[in-house]
Amino acid sequence: MAKMRMDKVERPRVKLLSLQLLANLGLNPAQVQLISGFIDTYLKLDAQETALNAYATCYH
Image (tube, rainbow, N blue to C red):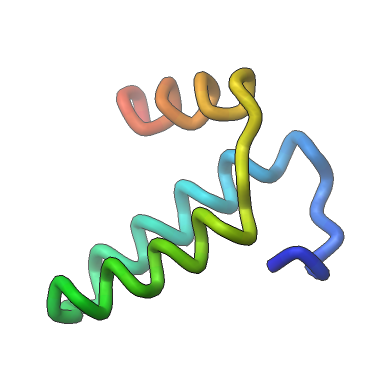
């Protein structure tokens, strides 16, 4: 994910979509935790991006 070279403004949307896709895969909780940990590690959001992500989650 770190090498995807996405624009800073795309990062919250990419994380949101990644987690939405993960939720729809039907994996067991351990698999979900492992993959979501990977997403969190390699796609860290700053405070502003986190706020945008929370807003998008509520109103998407």
